[in-house]
Length: 269
Image (tube, rainbow, N blue to C red; front, side, top):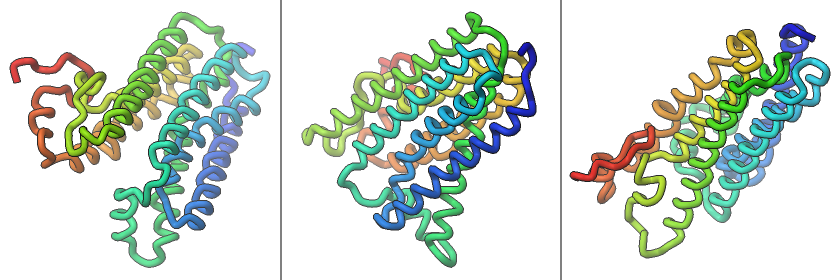
């Protein structure tokens, strides 16, 4: 097959949407039983991994086999690592303050509000953001250096996410650091190494999709753009910095450390 087949890809969009919906509805059911909605953050990574696996299963015979394997493995590795990290980080803790604040504003039934504003919204975002993963598996062109460039960008992103998360976890585990601002390791280069890593992961996956041709690029470019907006101006960096504002040492940390893209700190401050 030498052309991007729009019919099977369109059918796959439905399969991916159904997968994301099933993961989120199942998580919602568990959350009601636990009376804790923070577990949806674990489901976020799992939903991407599941959507990639389902797309791989239904796209057999459609796209380049090597690209199908590559994009599936990259997505599953990223999604499972994120889910495991968030599950460990939240073990033994109560409800996430973000969800407590959101549900406090609910009008009417709080459970239905949570279903709409947390689970269904995140399910829709999983479907939208995973478009490069879906489109790449229907692209017939053989892998070229662009795909490996995308893989390298993905690897940089995974490094910043995984190492940044591990450094922060060790920092918080030390009682001597209580109340202090994390400004070591990757956190010296950017105030948000994990969000920057996520940014790179999705631009990398988009490049892998672009390697398959203009059709895959055209249908999936919205994914890294939406993820970039969310990470920088949406529920990522902006909300976290609002939460951190006012803490001792925060203003000086902001003054010397890059807001998002890594760079050496300002040494004169």
